[in-house]
Length: 315
Ligand code: ATP
Image (cartoon, rainbow, N blue to C red; front, top):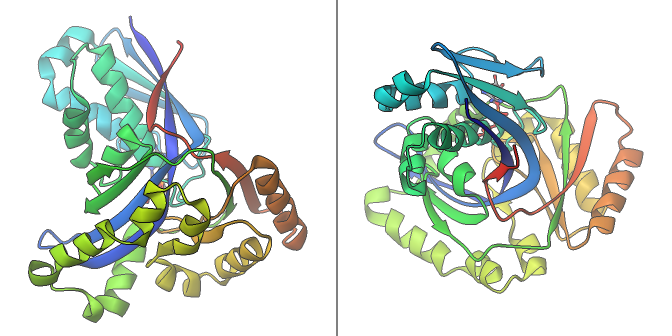
């Protein structure tokens, strides 16, 4: 019976712009994604018999077919029925470290690790692109969570251009444990409030993508100019999530006043992050924010940028 242990990295968005409506009902996006050292541990192993069993001791993580990691295993079994029949059932164990419903792609990271783990378990020899195409069937963030590092994501977020990997940067993450934001809610609310500002993608989408490609954020990443990256952080979804959650606005203000290169909400939130050049600076910011907002519900993490999404660990 094989067994694989994988690290499944969280991500933050250094840039998130909503361009417009797509004909498939999703939004057309331009994002800069960055993997973090903060990661779940996902163990995938075969068991005699059949079926998918998911174990996780975190009370908020679903253990049934709604878990994205379970859905990833089900997709593999459906796509490769002969391998599934040959190797038997799959046990997935998730050691949850990434906060849930946080805008950090925790579920997508677990699904990414499950796809990679089952590919190894069943000796399928799939390419990274083949794994990413499977992942895209389940969620737009999964392809990035497989490869990770620093990437420009377009389309629904599943089309990736790998960028010069940002290294040596730290992030302080802040999130109220009891608060989570639904990603569909954030996008639907954005559409309701800002839908009339959307670009006509057929005539203007390519120009906007080209402008971002040759724009200041891409230049700052290419030159590893962290001060500039900090100034250029941007997330359109802040326009709907921050007004709906005054506590997140207050957290963002407190984090921003504590120092660092720049502060932003990640994805659909509610996690807010501040970038720093050193770990000691990140720790000082976390302490200052804790002193300013002494709420036991507020979780603060110090983590580093990571060069990879899913990583195989020694068994
Ligand atoms: P994203 O940034 O991709 O929008 P997120 O970080 O906001 O994701 P998740 O932590 O992935 O959100 O969880 C969102 C919801 O998905 C949870 O409330 C949970 O019910 C469900 N879920 C399904 N699978 C998982 C998983 N493996 N880990 C955590 N939550 C999961």
